[in-house]
Length: 235
Length: 231
Figure 1 (tube, helix red, strand yellow):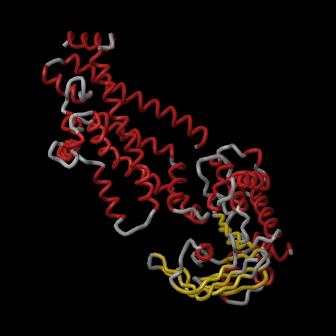
Figure 2 (tube, chains in turn orange, red; figure 1 turned 90 degrees about the horizontal axis):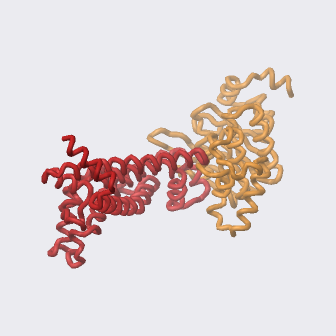
């Protein structure tokens, strides 16, 4: 089970402080959402957890044997869907037959088995993001980092991606989700961390945190973001 | 003037042996040089795009400057290196097609490397984080990015072919323009013009332009086909 602890993380990029003494503890299992205004440091936090950005100071513990990252824009190469999924296994040193089996299983899982040999760059936005999820899942990660995975997708494609993420979490993969879509956060996440100005200002169960934030920063963000009446009415 | 043009077409129509031999040598030398330029330049450009090390910026600047290397200077330096008293004089390569291939490869490599670096750097902006997140090593990332940009890299190959086949300074100095041995289209055109054999010069000129256009057209067709399949 993948638990994550960040303590006093400071990250400065191009003389701008992105993370300013960020401390948070993400519990193992389930889906944890990171929310907050633009520039709060959500994406940077995911990148620090994945090791893509090295913090200037602070300490970090990530209990995960294997991580996978799905970006807002699916980064696919000009090759077939199958080749793109296989890329996710390239660093694992698996035997060829195992690789092939995993590629086929991953494509089937996201409903793209019939398009294995089609060029990935021709896929629609939703298909591309499902392919990116297949690539991530093929490596059997125990920690899945998602950076606004549905930001560019229409509602139908968003539903498919959400269903896949929920399934993977239910099977034991820890998911950390950055999203500006608070309705999505409410649908998927068990707990929510609110970031503001490079710090975690609030962390609690999703419903309680979204509906009655305790800190002024979280309240300011959530008041600006969410049509509260509709969520309250729906719940 | 009309006589010259009539003779030119006669030489082309009868596949004049001189014209064919000279064109074939030019093509062989330039394609060999471009092949070497691609083998050296693509990995060099990719590494410069992907790796981060001290002095990288200076190296990129130098490479960009080397795109404009004057061919005659390259010829001169190679002449000194290959001449009998030079460090590689014992190889006996001066005034051979091999020396001409070497000279054109020196011209092609920085051009390929600089264009490759730019193309791969753009692809790296889009794919770099994902590839690092997948745990791929720097050489592997470079390999994936070369594969991803393969259609754009055709342009680098064509640019270097254009530079190689049309240059005269380097092949003239290291090849010596020896009849039947190291005479290429550009050196022959220059010589025949000076001698006044304008029909041979013109015939070679027509062949040279036709070759460049054909190579570009074939590359464009192949690229278009590939992009339609995998773009």
